Amino acid sequence: MHLSTDVLVIGAGGAGMYAALEAARTGAKVILADRSLIGRGGATIMAQMTVAVAVGEQEPDHWEHHLADTLAAGRGLCDPALARLLCEEGPEVIREMDGWGVGWAREDGHMKQAHAPGHDRPRCVYVDFLNTGPAVSKTLRTRLIRTPDIRRVGDLLVTDLLVHEGECVGAVALHLPTGDAITIAAASVIVATGGLTRLYQRNSASANMGGDGYALCHAAGAELIDMEFVQFFPIGHLAPRLIGMDPIMWDPFRYKLGGRLLNGAREEFVHNYGATDEGKYVVTRDLATYAIVKEVEAGRGSPHGGAWLSFEHCTEAELRAAAGPVIDRLAKNGIDLTKQAIEVAPIAHYHMGGVKADVSMATRVPGLFVAGEAGGGANGANRLSGNAITEALVFGRTAGKSAAARALARTSPAASAPAFAGAVDFLMDGTPGSGPNPAAMIEELQALMQKDVGPFRAGPGLERALARIRAMRASLPAAKPPGGTAYDTALVDWLDLRTMLAVAEGVTHSALQRTESRGAHQREDYPGMDPAWQKNQVIR
Image (cartoon, rainbow, N blue to C red):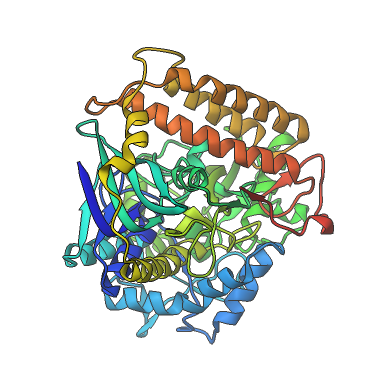
């Protein structure tokens, strides 16, 4: 099947949905494609916490203060123009979402704002009872349904972007329910496929966050920036078993209730690592991750290899006031926070790097744009807490407007189906039952990245990981299954592995080159920041 449109948006999380809405509002015809159900995959729907934005509803604020905190968190590596765009336009998109009925929590008629780590004041809005991401996603899905110029296509795994005469003119995709190849011609393409945290064994990501967008754009000729900076969320749930709830749900509890982070001896410890915590969650994520890992290495961890997070000082009334029905959901998991602490440990959560773009979200490939976590540069070496959804919405809107303007100004005809023949042949060709099992290789890669390219790195481990990743990549072509089969999990695993290995090599090589510790990139053999390394690494 061959489709044609003005703007193709790949990825239907928060950034992709907002991009599609803005492109349609600008006057373009849009196809919104996702390998999952539209608006049900990606990271936004899983984000239960807060959104950083200088709306100043409960305390005077200005986007310049938000920008100062964003730049400080980025350790000198933020792209100032992108960071400014995020902070300056954040209030506008949050108020637009408010007008669309997202339901930001309110007090005395004003949006409530929480004080998140790294911010100089209460700044983060939220939808109460851990419902921020689901509410944002539902609101955007509702707008999509009401927008006739957006065609929504789920179960579509994009495998290649088509570049013709130096311009991106469309994409090739695998239709998962049939196994057919789908070609899509577009005057502009927006990649909004999220990050890469599926590369790690312990992660907070959707299953489709394996770095698809990075690999697609890089193969098309775009640049990647800051690939070494993977943010680990310090208090991902570890034990007891928790079913049907987000593993990073504990953040807002700490904001509101001052949960105590304790080592195995039930002692507070973050202050021993050059940070101030004092029972309130004000320490940045990279420092909290470092403190927990070091306590575990010193033999002072909790029983399952993490740290204790305790709310035992809180009454049930205080817990219910802060978390409402979440307390009942915890009870169904056998967890009573008034009587027991839970165990937490760092978990791969977000990627600061990505595809290099300008303030219009355009890459160096004409016709190719990015949005949300697929783009890199705005956050530098460490993302400020709460900036992720703001980034998705602001950059999604910007990408949609820019891509639509370019598409509507184009006069050349759309790419025809024969132009896609090479990529279609590659997708359909293969040898049945050949080579190693790609699912097993994905598990091996995740374990390798967790061990050697995790929160704390060293030269020997990075070199070992890089050698193994390159060997796995070399073995990949001979293992490709043929296309054409409905719900072919072997082919999907192979395609995912192809993407994940390419992206893992970029992360690992960049981490090996950066011989310092800065933000989320921590080298055991090069502790401390080196002024000579206050520069970005770009892969092209």
